[in-house]
Length: 437
Ligand code: ATP
Ligand code: MG
Image (cartoon, rainbow, N blue to C red; front, side):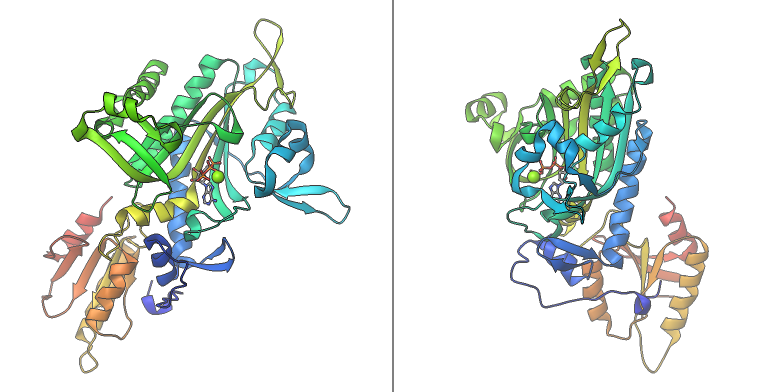
């Protein structure tokens, strides 16, 4: 892609409510544009990053055997009346009436709808377990939308639902998701801490929040440094191994303010290992058993003959919030570096453009074409502005690799730079080698 063709409305004037760096950066680089309070359009740069995050989330869900589907954004109020949440959910729910006066709503979550789908088709333990998910827009009429897409009203979420015949099997589904979440956040180069959480209005008895450390986070967290040393690849997919994984994480004291207990924190963690910090919640998982299946009468035949309410869990990841979380974690001293896995481009070519001599532009175009032929997603900065302005702009865009074409480049060697590291002179062949995934 040529930068001159990219729809990239860079802005300098920021609204006063853009208080945190992710919100500022997303507006400055034209990733999003606000359309109403807490509602945003996703412009090409932001949308491309979100789609990459979405595919990583999807791949890790598929790997544990979850099946993708798609439920609508608009739901009927009827099933919410059946579960009792139509009244309980309160003002966060956006309620709508259609032309016949039927009560509808824009889904804030999907426990009711998935239970309704499930109960109308699955009747026997023989069809269990089931693990279903979708990635869909949600609406919550947050009282104070803020921080851009981090706490907005319309947001993009992956939500999954598990169905099992008994508690033990349901816990295995829960553990599989727990594992998939950690893998997903690792691939985004984020260190997420799973923390035992209150179950809140979704209800139930087992729940974890996945939290990224960041100064601008809304949650206060208290944890043990050693929790970061647990190695995911030391576990396999067997029931026992996954159970051990969860209990290994749980063996370290970890809590958000809701569950924080000062005495316990100080007693359980050596002073030098105590972490008191702010964090951003990027995912939340729940096991709530029969909380919805019972009122919604979602029953299956048990091997012993009786009918039982199916045991359910639900599992959310804030796909759109993750973009903000990555920026909060990786935008340091005004320099952004996207994790390679979600970067909007693999590499940017930055030629120093001189009006009287188009040698650099020609050279840049040539390697641009060659890299493209090699399926490298490359951006060529063909905009006519001075090199220091270009560098400033690319500090914000955060593409992790740069080829700089200026006085230093030779016939077949180019200045190659990974953001945050020292530049080296490499041939195109060596550059291609470096970019191999
Ligand atoms: P929070 O405590 O931040 O309000 P929640 O507990 O209400 O989150 P869940 O219902 O568990 O959130 O939703 C799953 C995920 O969706 C959250 O972990 C978060 O990443 C994301 N999410 C929730 N609310 C919002 C929002 N208003 N804007 C953006 N993302 C959100
Ligand atoms: Mg909430």
